[in-house]
Length: 71
Image 1 (cartoon, one colour):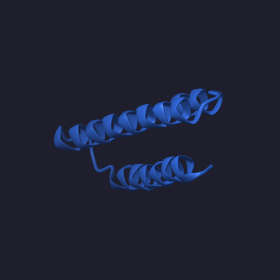
Image 2 (cartoon, rainbow, N blue to C red; image 1 turned 90 degrees about the vertical axis):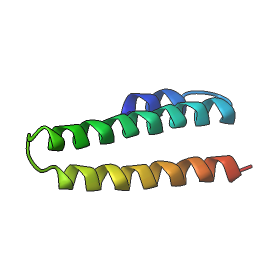
Image 3 (cartoon, rainbow, N blue to C red; image 1 turned 180 degrees about the vertical axis):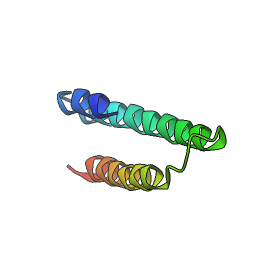
């Protein structure tokens, strides 16, 4: 996920930047799935990590929205 954000940062056009942020959001959803799977398989609680993913998701969504609405 951080690598996608970094790659998008270097892109010149807004659509290209948003594309990589969208890919990062998809990677975040993958992480969310793996945390749920780990819990279901009995590897322990990971509520703290899930909360951090949720906060990261909100920040990423806000960043993408701000970028789309900027001139």
